[in-house]
Amino acid sequence: MNNDLIEKVLEEVRKNIDLKNIDMKKVDKIIQSSSENLKESKEVQENNDTEKGNKREKKEADVMSAPSPITEFVGTAIGDTVGLVIANVDSLLHEKMGLDKKYRSIGIISDRTGAGPQIMAADEAVKATNTEVVSIELPRDTKGGAGHGALIILAAEDVSDARRAVEVALKDTERTMGDVYGCDAGHVELHYTARASLALNKAFGAPIGKAFGIIVGAPAGVGVVMADTALKTANVDLVSYASPAGGTSYSNEVIITITGDSGAVRQSVIAAREVGLSILKSMGQNPVSTTGKPYI
Image (cartoon, rainbow, N blue to C red):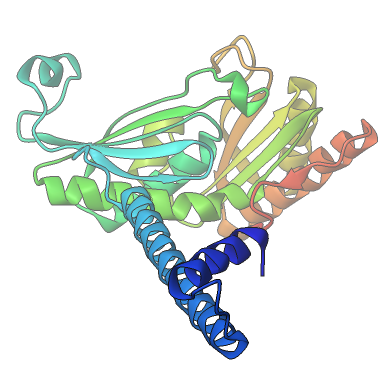
């Protein structure tokens, strides 16, 4: 019993007994009764405080889990990737973007780190939905180390198709980030698909329906060695080559894309991955998979 409680008990005692004719048994009963009453009062107060605290925590949790009030917001993914949709594009913006008149809705995938993973994911999205790839841009973004971010615009006649495409792309970005390896010294990035579609065709000129691979190395010299290794490993065709001053947004990396037989493309990508990782390790670094789940 603490001092405050003892003092309150004594106050109750003084109120209920005649100090000149003290009956000790009565004193004991009064003390016991007063103590129990005060204890019950304290428990009620604590319960009230707890209930208020629970209500406050629940209210805060409800606010945090509430859906975004921004109707254009669809979701997010790894790499500071955000998915958005515009149901009815403003007429002036529609014209400047060069959209076909039949498309009023667009899906947007924008990120700061990756580019390749998001484009691969968008490629899967257009396969699964009734959408068209309007544009794909690779902005320079230093948050990704030596590389790019991405801005991908998908168009649809129905907003539900645009939204669905963005949802598919956001979900698949988690998978395609598996073969992006980074460290302070640089990064290596690899991608492979057995059947390229419209997004890869728009971004890199990939032959639609054929196996396709993307090989990226940074700093740029690492990418050159990776490219040479890939082309020497198997019988594949070189689709594109991009370097800091040509084909990239002056990023410190080399990017090549390849096509050919499915097995050959995959073999070349894997060989490039091994040599790229080995070089970065030789630089005293330990490049690790962004997600820890390589997919190639």
